[in-house]
Each structure stands twice: as structure tokens, then as C-alpha cells.
Picture 1: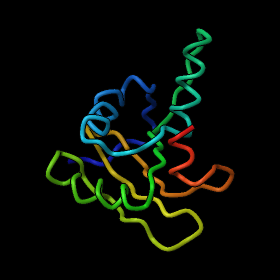
Picture 2: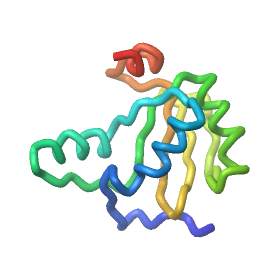
Picture 3: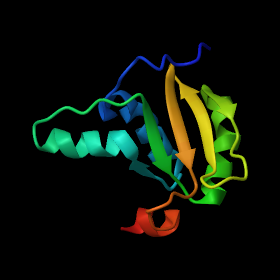
Picture 4: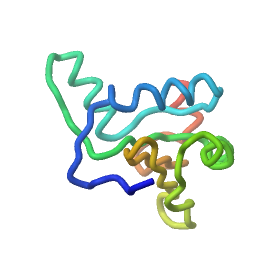
Length: 115
């Protein structure tokens, strides 16, 4: 599976199938970053493009997604490393997906999902 091109841009609609699959599988998550901004902009009749999909999930859910991903056509590029913002990098249908378990400036993943 080729790695995604950094020059490609997407809207949240390009990730709708992946997001529906996460929902169907019961993985708690919330969309953040460019796709979240793009979804809001769409409501205002504007278009915002992004290179990837950023998702915030609780740490345990992130681990569950990482176990689930390889058997479901999602390539794991990099597992989260201990650092300021642990992030997993995935590729789904040639599109990059970044899953974070925390983020500066956002509430803990569980609280952000409940909001």
C-alpha cells in the first residue's frame, strides 16, 4: 500500500467511510484538526481542505484501534511514542489518519468525546 502524498488534500467527506466504520465498531473518538474545521466550514458554505484526518481517542481506545487496524485494511505507519503528544499514524485507502490520545489545548479525550 503506497504512503499518502503530502500534496493531496481532502475534505471530511473523503474520510466519511472510515469514520462510519469507527462508529460501527464502537471506538470512541472525536474528529479534530483540519477535518473538524472543514466540517464546520461546510455548514457555512465554505470548503476547507486538509492533508489528513486527525482523531482524538482515549488511550485504551487508541490501543484497540491499533489492534483492529491491520485486519481491516488500515496500514500502521508508526505507533505512538512517549512524547508530548502521542500520535499513531495510519493509512487508509491512501489517506493519512493521525490518532492522538491527548492534545495540548483540548480536554482529556474522554471529556472531549462526551461534549
